[in-house]
Image (cartoon, rainbow, N blue to C red; front, side, top):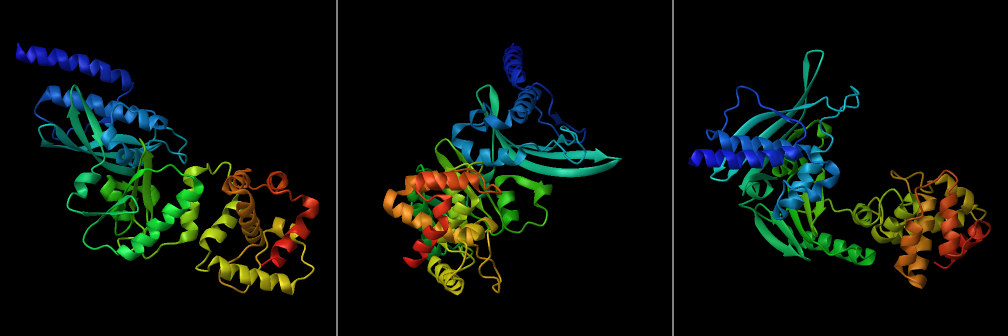
Length: 390
């Protein structure tokens, strides 16, 4: 009788889960050792199919992830988006999902390992592999990243409102400089304040492993990169670039990262974006003051410079140097500096979000006249005024 009741309850639950799982997403090879409890296994498989079938655009609303696990699991799900499709073979379902391993860790938790493999002319092509945890809660299983379990012995230090996780030692001075710069950028941008967890991995391979990405062909040969997500008012970064020493901190790139968290890249004008990055973070190891001095030297050596033409050409004014410095970026830095001082940062945002760079820069010049009052006809003389004021 008990078994019958359990079976009926499980059957009802599976019918509900299968409403989500429109198709069997997981193939279970014969050599995989399955849980002894067949009812529990059926629930687990139905939940897993439902989890993999959730529309990738609705990560935050998925019914297969608990709220407490959302940030890290969102980052893992981001890595799983579109994983079955192949542009090369023009097949949206080229890579099939196979269950490699299912291990019961405790009374309510399983470790699941999946592989995504396609076959072309008899040759298997390994696309990706993932490890995730399945937790039974009520009448279904929920899924999450193994990140907390993989870092259970790590140490934690709070810096500028961020929970920094590291293995043994942390370069606190460098870390404070890094998170202090983030705090300053976010304040300027008016970014929402999130509870943030930051994990210091030694390299990108370790960052992937920590999150639950055993392998992904996209990242072949990538030594340094990071994985991040925002969900439910919380942020996560598994950083495989800076390490616990925070030795590769670039304020220029960090500005881009923080700006892109606030504005969609679909509306950001790159020359203005680069100009603000010059102004607030320098470039190529040079400070804004050093860049400006180089630009002033160039300007004084070219008293007849047509800044309108040079702007549209994105002229490199430091050609002998190893890395380029662009006229349009510096001009925007000078403009932004003036606009922020006189009108406040919201006016800078208006210029930043005037749309992607066009060949003619028409959208930029339209926004420039509206926001700053500088017309095309007055552009050259206005730039000279900005230079001479320095």
